[in-house]
Length: 295
Length: 279
Image 1 (cartoon, one colour):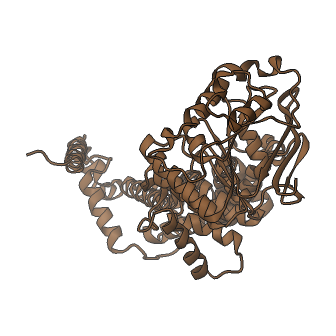
Image 2: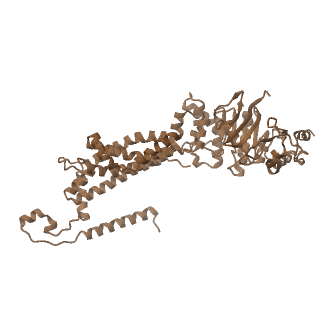
Image 3: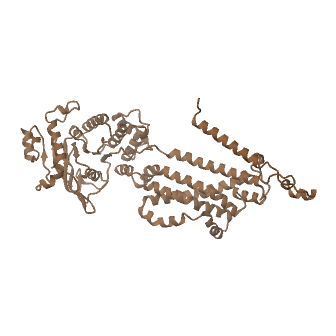
């Protein structure tokens, strides 16, 4: 496929004799928003760390923009689960640290001006000189987002960025991340536990089975239109089809997936597009899914 | 109306101090036995024997002596009679010199130990053996090799200030949060810049705590070291006044040692507060 921007090719990660996952294949197109859902301990974070270059696969490779990755890169920004801001720096200092690492030849005035632009973008104007300890959880995560965006990466990697926030803050930040990613055409790889969050944000939702020995069970193509609004997204006729499909998977199928699907080919993970009729079929094959979608 | 806690604490402190002075005064007021002796002999014996005055100075004697020293802290009447200010200056200079040399070694070495698990394990046995050695045990060896008493005292300060700072630096550097290091990694920050922009500020509070312990130990040790090497310094002053049987001066010296130690500690505590960050 020519438009593949990120290509995960048969990666495995083992600690001693236990394999977290093996033979994992996944392609992500440019500008796509991909969410990964799976139970704790299935290796989602390990996949993200490998994509970030913070961890190396025991086998296989990840190719980004035609090049195998080898360590961390400024092209791939990470938004960590804990905000991981540097507590001795101010908001501006934290963002400027990233900008200065990207543009090493800039003067500090240039760096600060660029950082300020992204602080404004995430709605933190006026809080530039506060330290992380003085910010609420939501504001801290905004700084993390501003920091990741400020280096203008090719890919954003997010590890449960909103899981530590209260529901209201989470909602606003989701809206903002969605807006910013659409405006800038970001390619995003995001890990989440929250099914509704995945449906609201993602173009594709990757379902991962339980570890150890986790596999990508299927890729759910989000049937909702790309233009979606928080207030009526759940009224879309396909919303509950997708939601039920994912929850069925998490509750029932993720545990026994490997035993029940001996023919599963990790290289060609089935693409499912749940429609109105699909969720009734718990063991929908990709063909069923496609049929349902076209129906 | 109740006063705020600091005020109430201050009142209790002052009351305790006043009570202590009163008991001290009453305890040293009494007169002992007076022996009859010839006037010539009485001149040699002093007022303890002739008038029965307590041999232990009272708070008023010490206060008067303190005032005397405060008025003339820097007089110099020859090698055995120098003002307390001069003696303190000698001691502080020795402590600071030995301490700064120790910091120049301890912080970089501690940094390397903290960053390298190999060095950490390789150097651990040496540190564990060297750390518990009383600094004064080094004194004969220092005197024998350096052949200069004043430099030996500085060496003893150096060796005793070394360990707390080195161990704390290594610990602080080794326990920098993984996520902060990951931030630097994903931003492709080089090793040297990472050491100065992430590890140093993150470990600074721990390093400063080690430095604070070090200066405390250095100030404890200098008094003992100067008693041994003699010549100058507040430790020598204490020993000299003991040989003069001037208990008043010994008490004055004890007081000033405590005050200077407190000031050194306060200075480092303030520095620690500067680099501490709330999380």
